[in-house]
Image 1 (cartoon, rainbow over the protein chains, first blue to last red):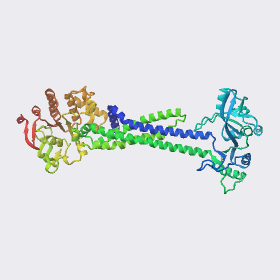
Image 2: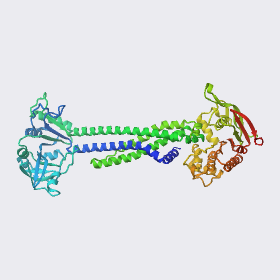
Image 3: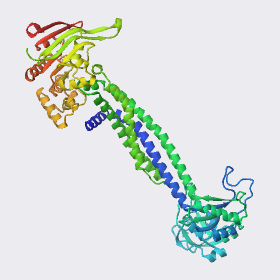
Image 4: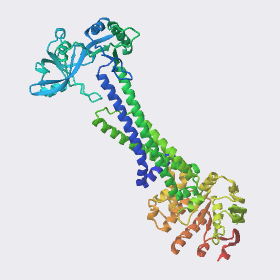
Length: 405
Length: 234
């Protein structure tokens, strides 16, 4: 009986192709919007997560200056005391649970090779930096301990720098100029791509910290200390230990605010991810409103359909259709209609999301749960908004219905 | 005429409106129709003949009095019970054919069987039989738009008899047809009445159609004005 009714409703939908299509349009657009939004949204969330994990997983970053607060990072009133070599030494000596501890200072500097030039992020650091940031070398070698200590004129370059100066060629052994100093390339960093904020992570030159301080910065300051937790230590556990050690070496009593900040990249990643998830939910909800509008469109057309087919209903009632037969017929028709719209909408939504994932270079992340939900929801919309018109049809008086022109 | 009673009207009233504006479409009608009768109902418009027909076909219920169909007090049944009664025992033929548009003849004929829950294969078989009975073999895949008026009315008759009903209610079945087609349809109805023992109640205002019926009931102002057998009807 139900299958028969579904068949009948498909026939009736086919008989009014244009009207059925226009009815569907509301649902199609609604479902397509929801699916596209949620799929693009979850793709963005994934992208943000991988971007931040590219910065290094389980990473703490120490900076000088008060922790970010209402006044932004570091108040205007505050004279910040930079981080220094002794802070790093203290951490290396006393901090347990860290896999790698690396100081780093950086600056945007013009880098020159031959007649080509490029403004690049030049970072002074040591070989622990690669470990802390989970960064591997494609070729060459990291700084040796003696190069780090002596501040030798050697450097590692990122993929963007290589492409600018050497194309696809091998950069090893070449010498590039940075400001008024020069350094010999000893290795090539593996490409990391862009961050979610559009920053090219491969436009970098790494050199020993001592060399950077002496020849480029002209001071002994350290901008950041990167601390990677080992596998057994969560960053939340590591963070207070780092603070204790630094308070100690920087002689800050517990009653005063520290003059440094420790950022937990994992927490930032989680916060960013949850922010995009919230955003996705909001966009999905807005798109959901259009689904509601689509549902009202269904109700509208079903009412028209019932009125238009009053005579047909009269015939059916006269030859012995039970009220429920008519009710079910129109309910099934509305449900089949909106389900059809839902399926078309899902396909269009996925196509839009697929297109967006290509243009926005985010992963294409269709969620089966969301798709199932969309199917269920569009069927529900058909039933809910089809019910009133269907009931109206079922309650018709057969004599009046037969007289209807 | 010793066949059992199929239909009895016992002081049936049907009224519309309230107070001063109250109109009596039927004003205390007594009528009895036996099985296998072929009865024509005549009368000017407003005489109550259509109302009587609707009550006979269990589409409508009396305001007062008793309407019995096969001994059942059909006037007291709710609409879904009456729908069941119609589905099992009554077939309808209308002046305007009332076929579903853009639906083939066979599908139109199958329609009452769908509401009976008959399987698709059996439905098709019964529909073909019914179409054969009305002389429409080979037209089962035509839609109403592809059939002439006479053929459409034959499809409608096939639809009415496919359930093998006890009663056929025909509302001006030849009202839209020319003389030749009218006689074809009337001959078909007469044959069904004779061969199947089908009880036929037909509302009409055409004198030459009335001649096919065995008995003529004339309505006037909501009452039965005359009830005559065939010989005297002419």
